[in-house]
Image (cartoon, helix red, strand yellow):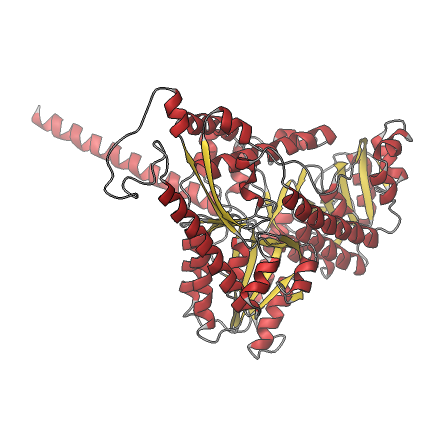
Amino acid sequence: MSFIGKVWKVLVGIKDGLVLVFMLLFFVALFSILSASPNPGQVREGALYIDMSGYVVEERSRVDPIAVLLSGETPPLEHQARDLVRALDSAAGDDRIKAVVMDLTAFIGGGQVHMQEIGEAMDRVRKADKPVFTYALAYGDDHMHLAAHASEVWADPLGGAVIAGPGGSNLYYADLLDRLSVNARIYKVGTYKAAVEPYSRNSMSDAARENISALYGALWEEWQANVKKARPAIDLDRVTRDPVGWVQESEGDLAQAALAAGLVDKLGGRVEFGERVAEIAGEDDWSKAPGAYAKSDFAPYLADTRSSLRSLGGTDNQIAVVTVAGTIVDGDAGPGTAGGERIAKLLDDGLGDGFKGLVVRVNSPGGSVLASEEIRRAIERYRAKDIPVAISFANVAASGGYWVATAGDRIFAQPETITGSIGVFAVLPTFENATREIGVNADGFRTTPLSGQPDIIGGLTPEVDAILQASVGDTYADFLERVSTSRGKSAEEIDAIGQGRVWDGGSARQNGLVDQFGGLDDALAWVAGEAGLEDDDWRATFLGSQAPNYDSLIRQLLGGSSAPAAKNADLFAMAATNREATLSRLAADAELLAGTRGIQAYCLECPAEPRPIGARRAASLFETLRAVLAK
């Protein structure tokens, strides 16, 4: 029996070893699949097909595959603006590419600066005598910003187009907080600092309305000018001044109304559209489906352009580019969120790598003052080594985003950039009134007015209240000092254009908050010039790891490349997208009130990188609200 037992143990051991080996092989294979990049070999002659489903962002966020698979919710696609521009510019000079097709059916949107940058890249494709086609079921503002630069704009006969312009509603909670006996204690400096108004008011203040009116008015004028220049035949006045009359002229047929106003060129389904593209790109030898045409998808084509750049070799002269995208927070969050610790580490790790210059690309409405200062100090360490530093603003670089920029030698922005918002605040909810109503009282003994403070149940003493406000005031003074040093102006001059006021890029250039108009390429060229480098003797190196490549695999596992509702994005589906934006705003407001955050330099009027929440996140949001307001 002992012999049989020993044999059995050996067999069990072999079995366990084989299981372990197969598990290791499985996870190695899974990791290889998740980490795989698109195959450049998939590029062929025909059209470059770009599925614009989802959002255009400055920096793609990292997808947590475990969390996504457990939730069963498909995250929206994100396209980095610079990747789209690179692909379009490459297509302009690529003999394999006969045309570019941009499918905007499930496109959700992006910032105005990004839309203009992509539109200008589309213009460069057309200047190379290659047509650019767009197709969508329904066109909104961002769709139209891109489509205006196309050779032919197609819409489904059951779709149409609606131009809304910037603006909308904010949510205000003062009555709700009063009803729940929650005391939202607000500490701020800045007449125009509207980020705290949702907790203290039931409507927009006159100062905030004055500021937002000027800002959105400037952005709207810029949008119209860009679209009219790209598409002179468009009748925007007819569409925007009397939208009801415009639609009624076509008896409610939005597609015909869009055609009549020059918003679109042709109406047709995907088959008709595909047949038109095939006239230029050629028939698809791989598919006999109706409307098929020869094409290369965006992902493998982008991989092919990167492969070509690597094969060319290059100079050892490198200019570092670091991205500050999304809300600025403490810690190592990101990419897609600007974790102060993470970005500062990226900068410090590159400090000894021999970079000839640094460009900081900012697309952030601000956030934590401490995290903003951590990033600013890391940038200053480059300047301390006589390395030229340029700051490049994308869609928004305000409040904490501008705090970061004060470390640069020169600031570049676009007329559509949203910036400024030089002001700070903090919000601290206390529940002394709420607990008293349910029979809970706080009492005790203090050796000093600060003992046991801050007390969110018993309330704050007047001394603590005064100290907190003084701390916020001192932080604002620090903000003014950093901006005044950077801009070569007095603190009083900066205060006159500060106080939380938000500016468009054109106004910011006039008041000195911005040095010159230009994009990322202009900032890189300036740094190269300051470093004494020749035009063709340097290259940009983006600091930090890119988001992993398993995004598309996760979407396939969950049953599609984009949310089902977005696949048929008519005007009612666009309304559903706006609902998502409202839920995202509600989530942000709740977390700002409930979160354990320090002093904030954050701009309420400024859109962050779009990060919509799903159904589960929406449900947890209301649980968060319930928990916060029940404390």
